[in-house]
Image 1 (cartoon, rainbow, N blue to C red):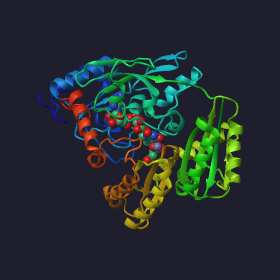
Image 2: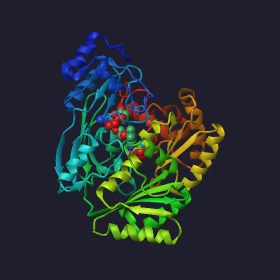
Image 3: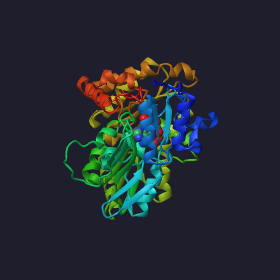
Image 4: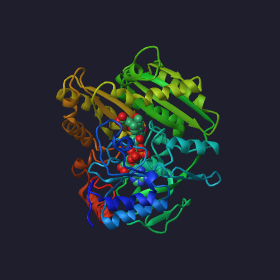
Length: 472
Ligand code: FAD
Ligand code: 2HG
Ligand code: ZN
């Protein structure tokens, strides 16, 4: 039987429902709604049913039936993705992994933790913390996003500078393949050269090659001291100098180095939850930096770094958090930039990376090009300078019509991405390709790489049932 999108017959629907049980098969419109709208309201999906499997075996049974009947599926975790990958745009069946929410094991001796796909990132942090360890992946969405989504998007976040991105934090994976077979790769081994390393195929695949059901995650020792500073400075060039100086004085203990334009801080202060400006005066740019050390020396490291930076004339003003509350307030200020930007009308996003040294030139050139294209447009640049990853989001001109502004999304992307390309950068540093950027991929990806990606898709999902129309 060939089935596409919402044309799932009543009989087939009943067979899918029977796998998870009626209680976990949502067909009611109101109950389905939160699964179908993505974070910014850019996409509204449709689905005949949201299936909420409670075990790997149920996921396997869903995939097997989907394969037999050629029924397309869209996997979803916390629904915080920013490229529309988790949304059933054409009436596919939605498979929510959120009920797979067990931390199966924490093994402090091996420094590993086995989490099911639906474990919310913040809960994974809590489980690690109980064992005096950390799982060093931190995102603004950590209260909702899931381990399965983090690995499927190869999420980055605010500490990738020192700890790496999601794929660097995984030793093994359990994955359900399109035909329903279960790939049991829950290995705790650091060293295993017995052929191709398959786990890396599924990380960053955005649900197009398999459904991740569990993972062996790497844990790290909890740092003994952590210090956080909020720094005001004149320009991205100077921020880059501060980054170099901080890396030479603090090495890998420099765990975060976030650049924030003044307009982003103003949005956060205006629309955020009762926040205060960390510094007495406004500055054109800010850096939020954090040092996490295995020794008790984070304070002296951050003080030494900032003193040297002041002497070199890089820093206009700086404050080191004097309490956990103040540290949290600095991070909240950084993390509310995304929601705060929503209050300023339409925002055209660019999640881009360029070589770290090229960030200042990228920002200057993009600012000039965007304002020339749309006079009054407000570039809001912020993000992970230490990784060369800038969220170059452009808020609409004050008073402009939101829909008309957002209708220029691709036109603006073209201008900004051309500058990214010129600097040897990427049009998706951490959020993925999903639905939003699929059309652009052939223009930016090496043709041989794209061929190989398509060949892998055909091999692992020959009937194209897993997240069709996403990525490739
Ligand atoms: P979803 O949104 O549900 O899904 C994302 C993709 O993964 C989809 O393609 C989906 O089909 C697929 N998928 C989900 N679960 C599975 C599974 N078990 N198996 C196979 N495929 C699956 N991202 C960053 O990288 N860095 C950041 O700093 C960051 N900050 C953010 C801040 C905010 C406020 C918001 C709203 C988002 C942010 N994001 C960030 C984006 C987003 O949170 C991440 O992409 C996150 O990893 C998505 O996880 P999720 O569980 O919500 O996945
Ligand atoms: C962040 O770093 C996220 O805060 C979201 O990746 C960025 O709003 C965005 O584009
Ligand atoms: Zn980010």
